[in-house]
Amino acid sequence: MRILVLGSGGREHAIVHSLASSPHVTAIYAAPGNGGTAGERVTNNVALNPEDAEVVVAFARTKDIDLAVIGPEGPLCAGLADALRAVGIPTVGPGADGAQLEGSKTFAKDLMVAARIPTAESATFADRDSAIAYLEAHSAPIVVKADGLAAGKGVTVAIEMSEAISAVEECFSGRFGEAGNKVVIEEFLEGPEVSLLAFVDGTTVMPMAPAQDHKRVGDGDQGPNTGGMGVYSPVPGVPAADYSRMLEILEMTARALHADGIEFRGILYGGFILTADGPKVLEYNTRFGDPETQVLLPRLNSDLAEVLMALAEGQLESMGLLSWTQNVAVSVVMASAGYPGEYGVGKPITGIEAAEQIPGVTVYHAGTKIAENGELVSAGGRVLNVTAVARDFPTAVENAYKAVELIQFDGSFFRHDIAHRALAARQPS
Ligand code: AMP
Image (cartoon, rainbow, N blue to C red; front, top):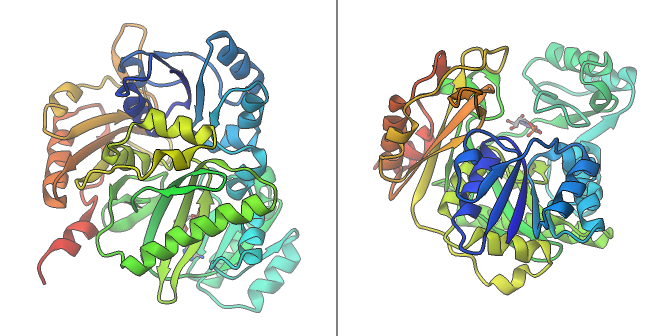
C-alpha cells in the first residue's frame, strides 16, 4: 500500500508512525511532513502544499497512491478530498460538504438542532447591532464565537458582559477575516470537557477512546488558550452512561449527514461538555484531533492502514471490532518560549533518542525540521509531543516527564501538570 499523508504536525507524525508499522505499507509520502516523519520507515517528505489541490492530485497520480489521509481542516474545507476522490483515490477525510461541520459553526448548529442533538442554545448574527441587542437581553457568563475557521482563536468565554461585547465588536471589525462575518452567541455550559473521536465511513461509526486535552498554556489552566499543551486517554471518571450517549450522538450526527446526502468518510471528532443534563456538543472537528491523535493511535492494536483503507472504501464494518490496548497514554507538549504568541525557531534539539529508551515512550514531532546541515531543529510553537504508554497513569506520567527532562532545545517549556485530573481520579479517597 502506498499512502500519502497531508499535513506537518504532531498529528501527522503519529499517523505516519502508526502506518509505518503496518506490514501492508510499502511507501509513505508525508506532505510536507516534518523532522519526525522524515525518519520513519519507508517514509519520504515531499514539499507539497496541502492547500494546493491541483498539485496534490497530480503528485498522487504520479506516485500511484492507494490511499490519501488528510490531516488538517483547511484542505478539507477547501475540497481536497473531493479532488482526490474525483480521480479515484480512496481518501480519509470528508468532502467540502461534510467538512462544513467544522468549517461553519452555523452549519453545525443547524444540523444539531434539526437532528435534536444536545448542544448549547445559540443564535447567529450577521450584523453587530443585533448581536449586541441579543447580548443585552441575556446575562453573562456567555460565549461568543466567530462562525468560520479562526485557528482556535475565535472563541471568547465571557465571564463579564463587557468581554462579550468586545468580542462581538472584534469579530465585526474584521480581525478574523471572513470567519468573523457571522457571530454565534451561545449559552455557557459547565462541566468537564471530553473528546470522543470515531472512524466514520458514511454509516458505520467506530469510536476511539475518550481523551482530554489541556488547552491553556500554563500550569493550573492559567494563561491564554493554545492548540493544546498535553493530553491523555482514556479519561477516568467518565460515567458509562455519558460514554454511551457521546457515542450515540456521533451516530446521530453521521445519520443526519447521510440523510442530507453527505457521505462523510473520515474522522468525526466530538468535543463534549458533560453537563448535569448529560453530554452536550461544544464543537465538531472533521479530522483527527491534534494532540488527541498522539494518545489515541499509540493505543490502537489494529492495523491503522487496514482500518483507514476500509474507511476510505466504505467498508468499515468489515473490520469487526477494533482492538485497543488496556494501557493508558499521556502526552506532554514541549513548546517554544513565547508560544502561543511570537516565538523563535531553528533551535537545535537533542536528547530524543535517549528519551525514547524509556519504556513506552515515543516522541512525536509537532514543529521540527531537518536543517541544511542535517541537524534537527525547532520549526514551530508546539515542537514535540512526548508520549508515554503504560499500564496506569502514575507510571505514564512519570515516564513522560522523565523523557521530557532528557530533551533539550533553547527556550523550551512545558506544562508540569498534564493528566493531573486522571491522577486525582485514581487516588483512593
Ligand atoms: P470551541 O472552539 O468551540 O471548542 O471552543 C473552545 C473552548 O471554549 C472549548 O474547548 C471550551 O473550553 C470553551 N467553550 C466553547 N463553547 C463553550 C460553551 N458554550 N460553554 C462553555 N465553554 C465553552
